[in-house]
Image (cartoon, rainbow, N blue to C red; front, side, top):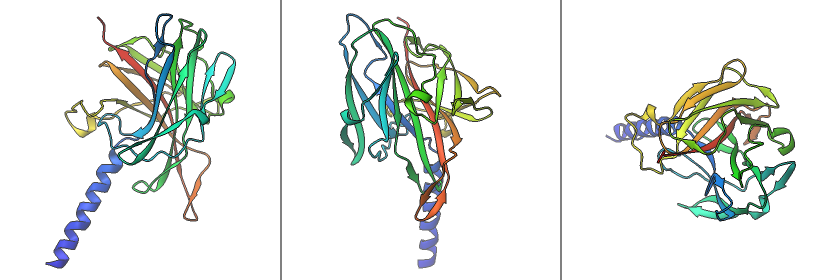
Amino acid sequence: MKNNFCRFVLALVVVLAVQTSGLAHFAMVIPSSDVVGAKDKKEIGISILFTHPFEGGPVMQMDKPEKFGVVAGDKVISLLETLREKKIDGKSTWETSYKITKPADYTFFLIPSPYWEPAEDKFIQHVTKVIVDGLGAEEGWDRPIAKEAGLPAEIVPLTRPYSLYSGNMFTGQVLKEGKPVGNINVEVEFWGKGKTEAPTNSHVTQVVKTNENGYFSFVMPKAGWWGFSALMESDKPLKHEGEEKKVELGAVLWVQTHPMQ
């Protein structure tokens, strides 16, 4: 009886580990608005967390990021020291606010501290961007910022990444160290806040591949926030308990779609 119970517990642990490892992790940088107009409140809130967006959780521990800042015009501004820790279910998330002061497209960027994922025997580090249009500038959203911001990888939009309707197609290019990354998976998830139901588990995370020049496209069928995570391996492994481990490098971009009135 005891041996049977032990085998049952072991099987349950294996099943839970497989299910957990199948869920897509996403770093999220979500502003309170993707467009700030002349008549709008100029200060926006920004939430930063590491979670499974479609399911609305669980929230995972996010240590203080290595970098967080914004590129506006020709300026790179560090916002790391403005971050305030916010506990959700006992796990650290982060938040801040930022005041839009002039017409520009504001690209907020995040380099989180690497996250050790025991179920996958590797570290995860998702370099994340989101772009906010400030005061109708509508320019600068399509330029790479990796070199000036110190990012190892990024998604560069070919579709303007704000003022989008549900049903619009988004196209982006994945770059690593400034070079296109071809034939890799780009995971796509809707931020469902736990309120969206998927027909099957495999519907939760959509997957498209980049072509040989690093381009991909996806049609966003619903109004809300959509995350694109281009997955590749970092050239810089890290040590865990004295052993060298791989680092999953994700280039993540968040865009918001709106319903057509």
